[in-house]
Image 1 (cartoon, rainbow, N blue to C red):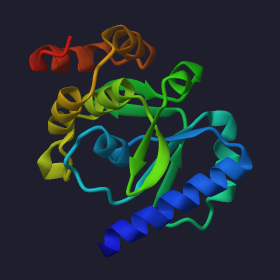
Image 2: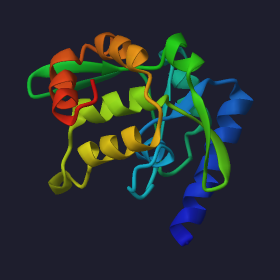
Image 3: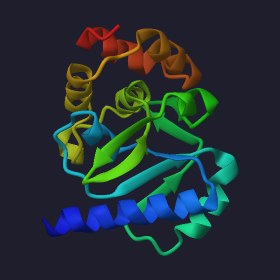
Image 4: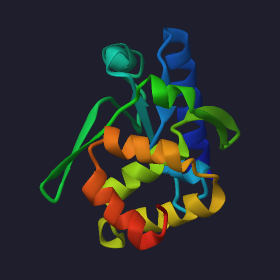
Length: 170
């Protein structure tokens, strides 16, 4: 329970500071997957935001431990460079979820699935990306039209489509 209390405190801190600063943000990594049905434990808070707010967010969260703030990610996996970013299209679809009794904005499930499909990390790396995708797909309604559009925006067609085909997602 000590770990849950620590995460809850961090969530409150992030939410209060970013909202007070007027920063648009979403939780996007393991905590988001957990909100969508992943069985993984939440150990930190990863915040995704629009690049224009990055410096302001880093400033207001300067002393917040266990919180990573990112924007405009470039993920290099097996010679492919895929992107992951927050834009107005994503913002329109943000879901508000409760995590440890804190109401937080969470990246849309389709974007979360794509980010996991880009990385495809395995248990040996301490991650369970494919299992997380399966849990999210089983627990949430997936908008395949939005999913298709976002795969293209993230330049993740080859890597993601292979996995989705194998998993029967698209």
